[in-house]
Image (cartoon, helix red, strand yellow):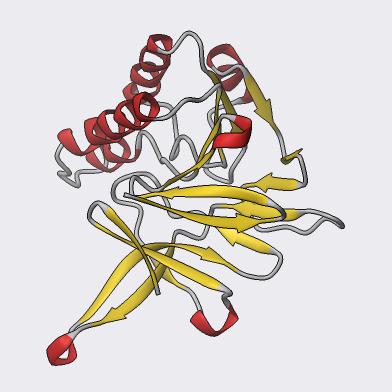
Length: 212
């Protein structure tokens, strides 16, 4: 299930799969996949299940097949840390989609080298990219005349239920001049943002996007 949110005159479809579909531009926006994180932790003796890493690919494949796109824009932290086997898995994975341009705005975790990224991805943006008034970056930033969409923060919100229940859920967070995408990847954690500063918050609960 998706919900529409408008920014800067553009309709953005917020997807329960933790991504944004910008139909007007045929672009899929997502952030903070953190590929390689499971392998990174396993290397240091933390026994995360390998199937958790494969879940990222299964969800991404389903997502790409579900929308009509030309470009996948990853707003930073595609890869978590040092080079490991998951990078080669990703390089094979994107070959499935020969008609889609995979692009990356570099994030602070993307440290495996520009040559590696450029050898696999169609475009790599070192800092940001502007498309029709939307400023796409990894960390929040400002530019006159633009609305910023970013990642990096892994935004979450607290939802209160019956019996003093409190759930921390990933969310799309929109303020007056910027919006923050939820982290796409598994095992990425959440940072609860101040709801008072938001114009709109949409939490993701299983397969639904819900406006708070």
